[in-house]
Image 1 (spheres, one colour):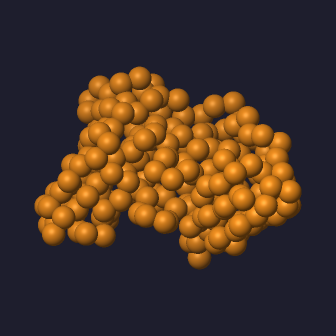
Image 2 (cartoon, rainbow over the protein chains, first blue to last red):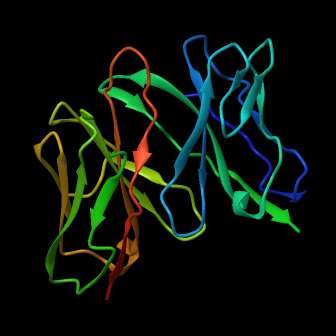
Length: 112
Length: 115
């Protein structure tokens, strides 16, 4: 599994875009990049995933660099409820199946 | 129904007790997972079941014993735990473990305290 590196914490003003970076320089060709978030006292929640192309859904956008060594999760209009720990994960198939291994994540604080 | 339901939400047990954590999903998912999460740390994978068979065991001590009675249910049997096993235990499910990784749906967890 590729190791991912994220900044430990970030601040964002409410209503502004939150851009969360992730470095996955050892990612291999068949490994997807996944983002989850975990709000305090809850289980992690899936946000978005991608392989090569940029992706967008109702929650966020995912921008993956052409060399696939890094990506950015964009929350276009952050709200106070987006305060959470955001995990960037690369997932690949191993013997026995897929493993979703969480790194340390980024603690995002959205401030009024 | 897109929920993964875990019971109980909180559990306090002594080191000599035997208890079980339960997890249930009705999304037709065929893969289920147990994770352990210590305070301010990321979740750590413990076990993966695929089509009711244990497919991944991340070298978890035998005092944790998983069981998958059917495709909707996942149990974690606990026996002779240590205080350091106190943590949030998270269950998750996904459609399968096929050619493409599937997104995981998590329950809210069981907060376990071992005295």
